Length: 404
Picture 1 (cartoon, rainbow, N blue to C red):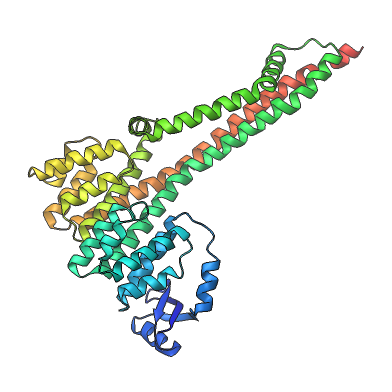
Picture 2 (cartoon, rainbow, N blue to C red):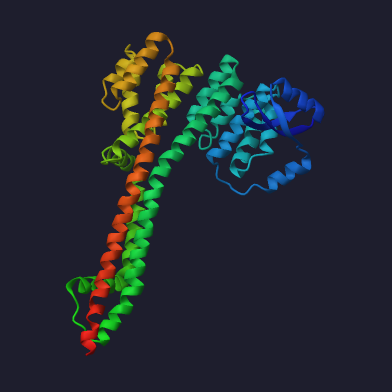
């Protein structure tokens, strides 16, 4: 049966895109309209277009965007009544990641052999994380797989947005600092030597700051490559250490103690924990299993250990809020919201509210830090460059005396 790619608007006016299997274009439009969608574009996905799509695949790495596309389309196709195997075949013809395509080809083979979607995906742990496996298992068990996949897509989108916010807060200051370091190196390695030769020609008596700057310049010109090589080697071994269990533990403890950024890092972790916990509980995964899964994807070994302790306390009969209250890593506001959710029977909703609260705190921090750090870094760069300029031009002002 022909397959059509479509773009449409839902009842709220939001643009949605996907694929629809139908006997003809008019049939595809009727199916989409029955789902309260206003079709704005419909494109047949013929074998030629599929071959062109495959030819356009440019990257091997599986990006978050690739996973979001896969899970969102899978939810849409299953909800439209397309069989699981056929839906994966349709999506496999559209993915842009070669590695994801290879995994989906193996998944199709497994499903043809009678394997469940959960077991098929679990054979590719480097692509499909544990959160996915347990949610899909819950969806298959309850018979609500399309709904669970849609919740998973929403969860992945929320995590992607949170990650982008966290990265953006770090990237901008890093870029400014890198530009400052580059400018200073160019000044010391290229510009200072020119003026140094000029001063020697006139045998000028140099101020102390000029002597210091020229000394630093001469030192870097001789030892720059060895220093740069040593930094590369040190960075390599530092990365190896930080990738080890002991190194990850040290890194995770350290980031929770960095002045100014401490609350920002904690808020990001709490938002991620709350988003994923809400999704798991809402999808029918039992509380203990949900806490264990979230501990693995918290992104911080300190919180991972704390959540495993919470899981143990819950297993011993404590409420989730009571177990969280035992650890200072979880603030009173979070504990109180979860307690209200437990008492009212609306724990997933309250967890979602907690996640939204900490996401808003992350947004607020990013806005403030961007406003504060930019002028501080610019003033620092200006002062540093100004110091170098003064060190060079002070002797020039006295050159007229030397010439006379």
